[in-house]
Length: 112
Image 1 (cartoon, one colour):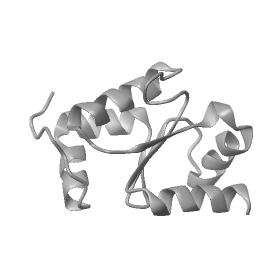
Image 2 (cartoon, one colour; image 1 turned 120 degrees about the vertical axis):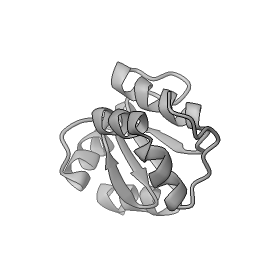
Image 3 (cartoon, one colour; image 1 turned 180 degrees about the horizontal axis):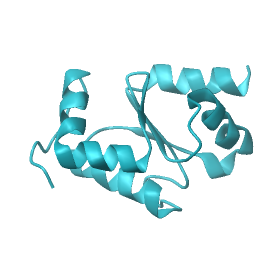
């Protein structure tokens, strides 16, 4: 199985996937930490994949999405964006709407 197949499989089998530096419990960069805080605030169940543990995934996810930076958030198989996009969507209430429309349960509907 190629690294692209592995990435595709993770995205296909998990409703919400965050490719990040570190883990949801211990983010290893501020940008990954911000996305974790947003997802945790919303109470969204997600899988965090630590790109620092595997250089193939670290480069592979950038090639997969054609997006140069980590973190990367996927919802129901679709690339949502990186930290800035996720934060802006969250602040505008769009992330909550997007998740709800995709059938992902969101605990907090209020804007931060």
